Image 1 (cartoon, rainbow, N blue to C red):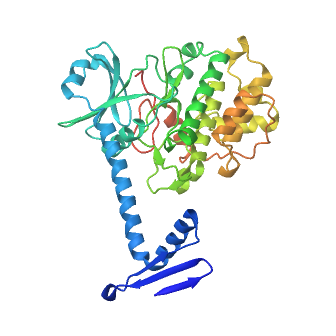
Image 2: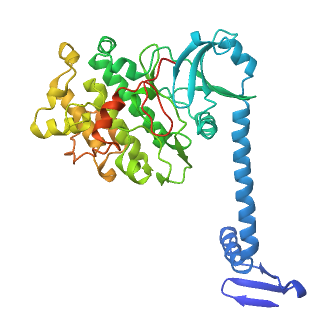
Image 3: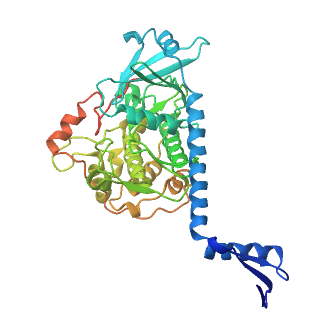
Length: 407
């Protein structure tokens, strides 16, 4: 049957039993209008078929993505014999340290390349899941301030991650030992803070995936031969696609007491602002040379509480590491860094800046800073336990406190 309209001439054809209607544009519409019209009409007459086509397309797209991920991961697989030779069969002499994941060993490949091998503890209750997460995640991430994954090994009972070897120890090894801290002058501390900030910014905004680390702390910042920082340990990280998602929630709280944002520690809500909070704690630790768990007295058991008290009393300069008094650290620079740190640890996550803003504030002194609101003092444990935590020397699974060795 022919049908005349202001758009042109149409031919409607009914195909008996199937009842499918075809619409053919005979004239007047241009190519673009024709395509739009066909899509509209198809959506009206074939909704189920279009839905099946879309679902099939999305399934193939996801399958392709998974396939590409597997190819990436498979290309990074190491032979167990190669790792055993490199580490002298995981000799204690090559052991670099111990963490929640397991032990870390130094090794040397046949070509002379030095590596760090993270070995899953057989008694770990969380390792396999974190292992798979870290392989898929870190294989996609490339930045000068992130530790580089070289490969992995899943063979027999062994579950191993192979990283570039970072010659200096973790940041906490230098930061909390007076003799070692002398190597961290003001300029070096500013470089370390800036490098960590850029690494987090890459994870949050510039990488192929949006990544929330969830366990940023001094022991997870490694220092290379030039004392440049590299963020490590992505076993607890959460990653999202490029769909704008920036938050989530979980019933399984993982991370480190003292570095955890209150909304995450108490409600399981994590977001890019959770990492901003952790960065704020790190910044305060780096410029003061003090751990967040201080144990001054019952009123101010944490560095954060102490910093907020001195801020309100106008005595923030009392926080300055005495070693910096001999250095070229100006009071105004120190005060600005404390100010930025307090902005990052505000109790309301919405008030915390993004990492892009933090990076800008760190490198541009002319940018005015807003007044910080009250920080979050939640740590998740009683005051008496704060002192006990400070004495720990290794990680435990779940909520961790760690003092990593070089790796």
